[in-house]
Length: 307
Image 1 (tube, rainbow, N blue to C red):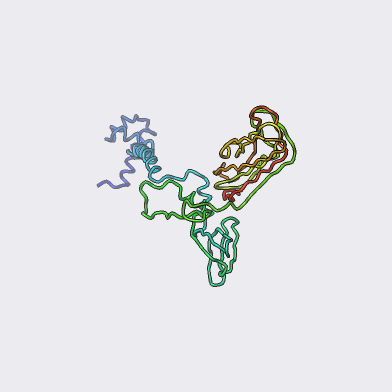
Image 2 (cartoon, rainbow, N blue to C red; image 1 turned 45 degrees about the vertical axis):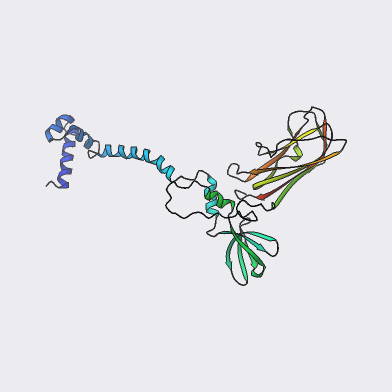
């Protein structure tokens, strides 16, 4: 039985006959009764099958990685991780205080005297008298929806199913009617401007209205115009338009007033819930039209990403 030490000495002697004695691999291999390929592997620092083993390992990894990616997909959005880190290890709740006040947050502690709540929007601690809490409903925040919407494994490690919870911003079951938006922002102008261009141009005084919002945003545009017909539309983040797109106002006389409400659901833009809104207008028939005064009012729910 050859010992491990003997085998190591034999390998070193065979390699030394090539490096120090100047013998060819073929000659040294014949003298030691081994294969030339094995001697070359020893001379390169291997043990015979090491090179082949490394090659096979790399090949197997390259073949199996796409399969693993399909079985257990990795989140593809940065927002997934920020939402996961910022979410407490507690269920979110819609907490009714008094007759109509609503707090979206996490119940940290509840006793006969106080209910301690972490507000999901402001991330502040609120102490509410227990007698004032008239209702509590476990719900799902938008950040939790982002986590839950990550592709599920093809072969899950657990058979636990994610419960279908109502949205924290809705008044009932999943898919139920939404509560009125909680915030608003506005711009107004009394500076007269005129156009006869058929191409849309920004109304400078009603542009770059910035908000941090999620879900549906409604924009009510009220104008007073004179002259020819005027077309209006509202652009989001210098790209998509609020629905239903461009609308036309046709004044019946001087100083005619019109109002229209646009709506659109906003999505994160560059991993942020910050969005800008701009009013654009034109003269569809190239007849001069004058905007005498106008207001733009946005209603929305506060965003959660980088706000």
